[in-house]
Each structure stands twice: as C-alpha cells, then as structure tokens.
Length: 449
Image 1 (cartoon, one colour):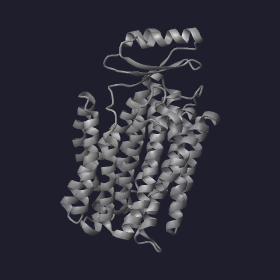
Image 2 (image 1 turned 90 degrees about the vertical axis):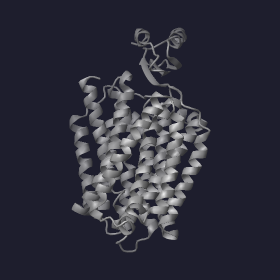
Image 3 (image 1 turned 45 degrees about the horizontal axis):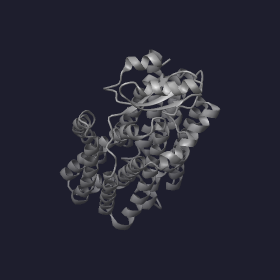
Image 4 (image 1 turned 90 degrees about the horizontal axis):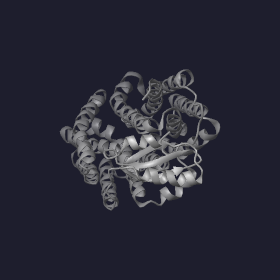
C-alpha cells in the first residue's frame, strides 16, 4: 500500500471507530444508571440500550446508495452530524424517553456503507481486502476499549457526560473528514465493498448466506440481551463495585483474546473453519447456561464471561471471512450489507426482548433464553457448506467489447488458483474467487491493467 492509501485507511478506520466507541461504551454501564431513573421499566432500559440498532439497520444501506449519487463526503458529514444531534439529545434528556429518542437519532447516522465505499474509491483493488480488514479490526478494537473504559468514564463523568463525549468524538471525526480526508477523484459502485440493488434477491435466497445472516443476528441478540442485566448482576449479585467493572471486563477480554487466537489459526490454516465455527456456537450456549447457574458467584461470572467472549470474539472474526468465502465473486458488498443489517436488527431485538424478559421473569430468564437461541443457531449452522479455501480478489482489466470479454474470461479462468470469475465489462473490473496459496500472481499481473 502507498502512504496515501495507508493514511486514508487509518483515517476512515478512526472515523468509524470513534462513532462505534460512542455507541458501544453505554453497553456495560447503562442498566445501573437507568434503574435509578423515574418511571423506569426493564423494557425501557433494554430499548434505550438497543434502539440504535433499529435505525442503524434501516439507514445504513440507503446511506451507501445515496453516497453513489450525492458523494461520499456529504453523506459522511450528514451521518456524523446526526450522531452529534442524537448524543446532545441523550445528554440533555431528563427522562428515559429522551434518551431513547437520542439513541435512535445516533443510530440513524449510519455511515458504515459510506465508509466502505469511500475506502474502495481511494484505494487500489489489489489492497481492498487489507483495507476492509483494517477497518473491521478498528471496530473490534473500539468495542473492547468501550467495554473497559465505559465503566471508568461513567464513574468519572457520569452517563450524561459520556453522551457529551460521544458528541465530541463525532466533532473530531467531522474535522478528520473535512481537513484530512481526500475527496475521491471519481466515485463508482464497487461490488466488493458496497451493496448493489440488483443483487439483493440472489443474496437473500442463498441458503449459506441466510444461515450466516441468521447467525450474526442471533449473536448480537444474545450479546445485547445479556448486557441488559450483566452490569446489574455484577453489582447486585456478584458483589463487584461499579468502579471495578472496567477492570473485570479488561481481564475477561484479555484472556478471551489469548484463547481465541489459536482457534483462528486452526480454522484458517488447517481448513477446520466449520468445525471451529460450530464449536464456538456451542460454547456461546454453554456460557449462557453457566451464567444462569453461577451469576451470584464472582468466580462463576468470571469463568462464564471468559467462555462467552472467547467464543464471541472468535465468531466476530470468522463470520466476515466465511461470508467472503461463500458469497458470489461479485456480490461480496451486497452480502456484507445484508449481514450488517442483520447484525444491528439482532442488537435491537436483543435489547428489547432482554428488557421484557428481565421485567417478567428475572435475571436467569435472559440467560436461559440466550442459551435457547444458541441451540437454534447451532442447528441452523450445522447444514452450512464447509467454506472453501477461497477469498475475493479484484483486478482492473480495462474497458472491453463483447469479443474481448469472452477471451478475457477464458484467460482469467485459465490462471492457476482462480475458481470463479465475474467480469463487469462496462467498468473494466473482474471479480474473482481465488486460492491465494495457489494463485499464479505473475500470470494475473500480465492480464491486469
């Protein structure tokens, strides 16, 4: 990657991470704050935590499509401005309904698809996978930092202060967009990075992709439902002082990442992706059963949370990789758009259902419900096709007429390591599925522009 490509990637990753950090850092603290509010119910607590997922799911694909027409920077600025408005509304709210409205506005500034499209505009095709991976890693890092620093910030500045901080983070992100982020010379639709309307039917009827969408829906349903009560359980049942919650999450996440890494290596290098994937789903369920049985005991909570986050982090890392392997060569962007929408819908439903279950049946009901969701997911995922050792690759081949298109298809398919080719002649782009270990890069370079 050139210095410009690296700078653009780091800028976009930082912009998106600042936004996601602001959304995530409420997760480990809000229940304890909200239970002291007037006219509060457990359902409203869950709704306040998760309502952003509904508006995020509704607006993220339209934002990406609108950026094709009106430009990337304007849509980024609109999305970040909405996030500021929502943060200010939540920070100044004196009721739970005001916070719910603020969180909904926060989620409506859904810039994920715009960030990915801009990354595709400003980087070369051969580096696209690395760019998307770096942005994805920044999201994971923002989640982990939010889990650790959220409780510490809550003690330092309070929840209202945290909402003001999220507004400040978005102002910083806007400055990064305006001052440092270059404007693309030319914006076009990138099928490997953003949704294409004509591809939705194919993606939504692909059995393997449906299984993965259902999986990420249930994964984030389980996560958000759990965090309606986990802060309460840690404080009221396990006896952990509120100012120590951040250190508890730090220990859990540190150990879980150490446990996760060897399994990622086994899944990728030793072609055991499906086995590792199903095993992680099973341990999500085991962790939920363990939480239901041990939530009143500190060491039980610690071990249960380590099991959960080891499996959760593993699934968060492997699900996008499996999508890339199973999606048609030219439909990765659309598949990832549907995947992200499913993820945020799961978060919304998880918080809402979690709050209702807590109000009706208590702490244990959420963990038992989540264990049932994990069992359903395991059965759904069991029939998934084993992901092949293939990944997406994009090359520019230049404008082609009909005769050249056919010969180019033959030339690309003849290259060792290429499994699938989709050629978009009008764009001069070839979308490939390749085995990177076997791919003849020299032969590919001779064809590519």
